Length: 91
Image 1 (cartoon, helix red, strand yellow):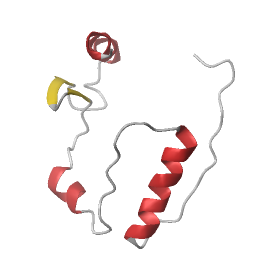
Image 2 (tube, rainbow, N blue to C red):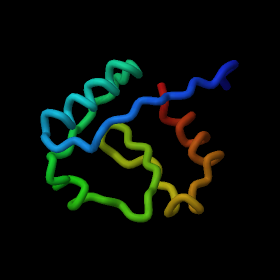
Image 3 (cartoon, rainbow, N blue to C red):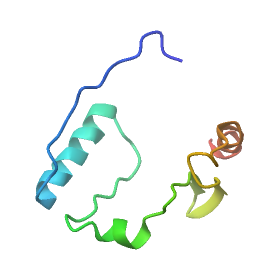
């Protein structure tokens, strides 16, 4: 838990080009020192169209294998279970 919560007021216009979308992603990576691989979907949102998971689900994937899949969100999220599962898989 944080002593002080920061308010992030970053706001971007909807990108109209892949370059603009990737620049937003690069800003995110830099701002939050994001270490995991990040995929930037094309401007036509092809990956979103192919793989959109509605309703949302939370996954834990380790070494390319799904270790945990939540119930459909947000009502199917059991954060205590997710936290316990993360504890099993985080090194």
